[in-house]
Image (cartoon, rainbow, N blue to C red; front, side, top):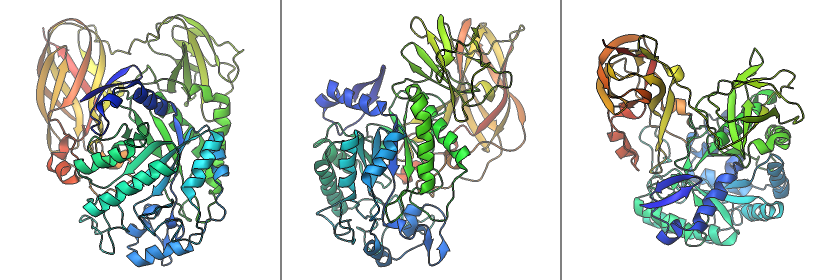
Length: 600
């Protein structure tokens, strides 16, 4: 185990692939901090799957366009023949990099090889690449590398562990849906092939800022070998957690997901899309621009406020052009970042657990308040700020002073931005924010609910599945008196029965709840699951029950924690993951009231 520093937070990581001296070095820390500071990048999913564009045999194929071989059950040779039609003569690397730069993006990640095994770079180890199998015969990755260097952006590479081409006409099948598996095991021959290609990618394209592995089930030894192939040549290249088996430098969130609160224990990145596909599909339409542009800007802000990087995807057409809709969204983001970029880039995480009107990022003795939801009374509350305030003004008009009193800002006269109105607070002294606390009633009774709870996730780098949102919950409590309390709940539980643990000031109460079991969640994952598809809330009728008595040993402010009664351990393989009790992957609990009634 090696100790590293990420910002001001000490990280205990287990990146076995890094040499000990380098992992603890100032050089590594700077590389990791530089990666984290980028904030915003462009993901490009592009390959021969853009030719069918979501249509096969005259039928619109549902699900992910880049996995059409899987979802349309396209025969091995028929799919490979698409390469002979791939001729993206309208591809303009300078234009794409320029589009990204204008939007405020700092890096670009290209799918050098997706699950279909087709390579968008020149490889000496296969003929199934852009140079040998297509009439185009130009290295796409090389062109992007040169354009990134020219325009001052960093280059990253996506590399799929599954390789349906390498595995031949009889690839591993997912027993749950009968389709080609995206969690296939890696043969020794495929392992050697991948290491050889990783060395090509690390050698032939200049500095690579990020290696984005995806899917598959490599063994611990294979994950380490892949990581070593990258780090031996480019030790400053950050590797994502989907390399599996704790070999990555940062977490890749589930697609289109971000944690509910700031995550600073581990660096992380959130990949996002405009629609339920990554690769181009001719028949898929996005939300109207007036809805899509604000949505993506707010994602960017929220991810920055919670400590991550946002990797926003486009899927070019087979001729190399960027879909006009995607250009329009990026240009809309560009208009906003041109005005308000300082409120995202170079900022730190929010000091607030919840803000009903939006988000907050932090600068040097500045708070950037991002107002997404305009208040009906024209006022926003900044809860718990203890610092002396020097000035409050709209970022778009620093000369306009706003009224601030007792943590409340009047937005009178502020021009509302349809995407995100940014208000700046300049303050003195080190930032000091007191958490919002729920106070007991005069009779000592404490009433809590989900509305005031902070939802914590559990995160790791063991596998694609090492992301557990809503793993436990906490409440900040005011002056709670010492003594005995009866504990009761009004709740819904999506489980027949489940154990829980309540903790406060060192005291613990173990109890069980009964509920209504829901349909068991599917393990058929294709790479674009919303978190709501993986972790579902409770249903049924509200139930009320007294679960026991807890003795609070001392008076004062406190944090009350509700945990699950069993730990859910992260496992690298799907089989190991499934052996554990699915009840404990998430709370599956809705709380209308959690009541501590003081006994006389």
